[in-house]
Image 1 (cartoon, one colour):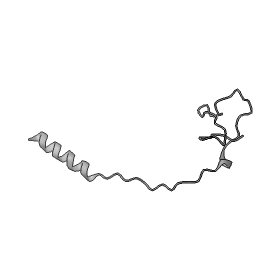
Image 2 (cartoon, rainbow, N blue to C red):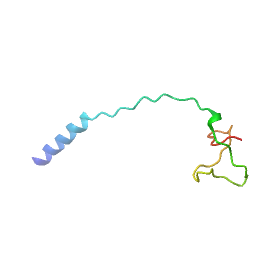
Image 3 (tube, one colour):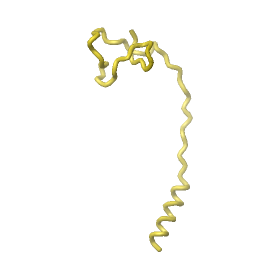
Image 4 (cartoon, rainbow, N blue to C red):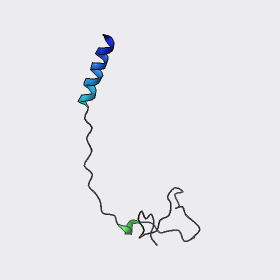
Length: 65
């Protein structure tokens, strides 16, 4: 009896919760906002130590020439 009551309460509470997606407006990508690529051609990681270098105009660019 106690278990069925607990299950019924959990089902009721899960049905009352509604998760909504916030409306996010898409922003146009601006290549002028990219940082400069490192001048050393041997470097493949940006100064932050995480981001792989991909030069603009390639897809997923992380720096500009």
